[in-house]
Length: 463
Image 1 (cartoon, rainbow, N blue to C red):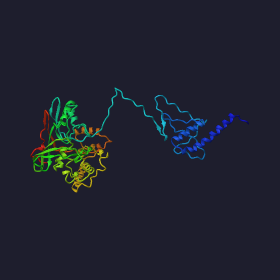
Image 2 (tube, rainbow, N blue to C red):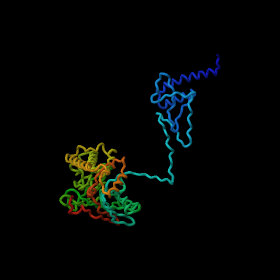
Image 3 (cartoon, helix red, strand yellow):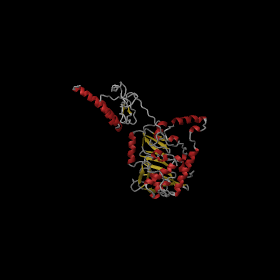
Image 4 (spheres, rainbow, N blue to C red):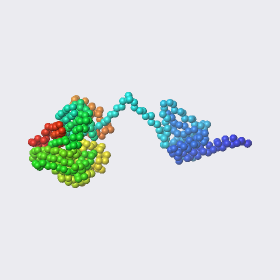
């Protein structure tokens, strides 16, 4: 029987389609990802087939084809026969308001992100921050003077001047605004967090600029008082050693010829047989200038947690003799305070140690035997305190007046915060005080004094 040209093309078309379908099924397992999807689309188009699409959570997988007899099944996919008639149902068009779900390279569903919404004038955004601030002294901030230009206070030890590091609420700026309604103040000078004494603020930017010009012109006189180890010389001592910053993050400086020039004048006031009270007049304003110069002279401040530390070596930095590198010095300082659980003295937390302070917080071999024994004893003492402390607050038999406080603590605790799971012992008041006090500030047209601290009395004895 003779077939016309149109009839032969129809037979060839069906015959070609029947051959390619099992061939495609055999090669499916050899292609993955976008290539497999491309082949599926091409074959479906050539044979008049249309691949189904999954939309709006419909159950099922990708387009499936029937393998030829004896061919292996594709891994991870079920094989089901093609629908009757050789056609697949066409994909439904997503309705309005619905996001189309696509399939990624590995077959997982990909949901496009929602459109970004810009905030308007009437939108209200709120963010909750979970934070831990180191402990500070409960001694109040006393006002020494106040006028239309200046506010002068007597700053207690352990409280920083302005928010920095982990401190925000426990700062002089924040406390003055909350307790004395003194806001928008401009600090005219800085005091170390552990230093107490006269601290001045300007109420306007114009006054702040005027006082800063006086500071740059060396018209402001500063006088400090401190208690140092040993018998300080009776004659006046002037130290002009340059100071270099070892680490801004840890806050450590030392005497070095590469440092910036500075000058401090010292005069002994009293000596009680073990320690001396010394008046200090810094003529420059370098970081930790008084503390570093006293360490260089061999009379560090009696309870200075940094410059009177065993980490500086047997001589503790006297004469600039430090038998270790800067990296070893920082590592030993961090290791000592970590053993004592007093990293807040260095304005550090445990998370800072993993951010690259030093390669390791293990003490270096330069520490002497006595120093290592002191560190070990401190660590053992803290371990005993931790073991004696309760592990869970809800197991403590509390008095009725403590129940509300415990509930508040439980509400503020965060299960994801490592600091919330620690039970730390509150420091003693003497642990929050360093024997360095800003006694007097004098400039053109003003002079302010602070009372002499108790530890600066002539008959004072160490506890």
